[in-house]
Every structure is written in C-alpha cells, then in structure tokens.
Image (cartoon, rainbow, N blue to C red; front, side, top):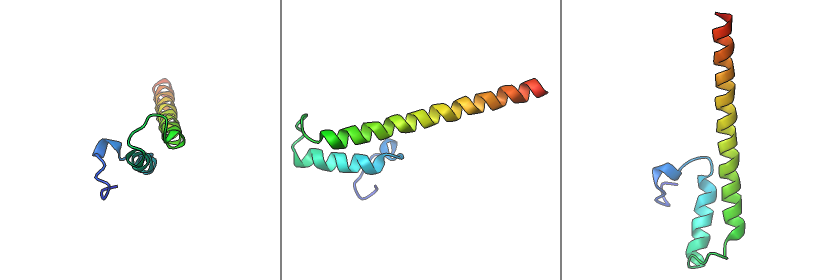
Length: 71
C-alpha cells in the first residue's frame, strides 16, 4: 500500500480493495456510474469490519460487567 501512496487512515483491512477501486476510478475518469462492483465490494468490507469492531466491543463490555459482578 505504500507504493500506491495511500494515506495512513485508509490502510486498514479493506485497503487492498480501495487500491483496486481507486485504480478503476482513475481508468474511468471518476464517472459515478462506473466501478459499481468495486465500490460495493469495498463498502461491504468496511461494513463487515465495522460489525466486527462492534461485536468485539460488546464482548469486552460483557466481560468487564461479568468481572465486576464476580468481584
């Protein structure tokens, strides 16, 4: 991702899809009706990653609540 000069905030679990999406956008001159499949794939990956973070935070809160109740 460093060779594509992608900014650090975008180098996450879906960064490889963003690289493909941006390449498609450059080839198609940023036309909004082009690259729909790549955009959908990238946004789906972002949504799945967000859900995983929410689930992880929920699990952490549940573990903390259990720990407080046991103490």
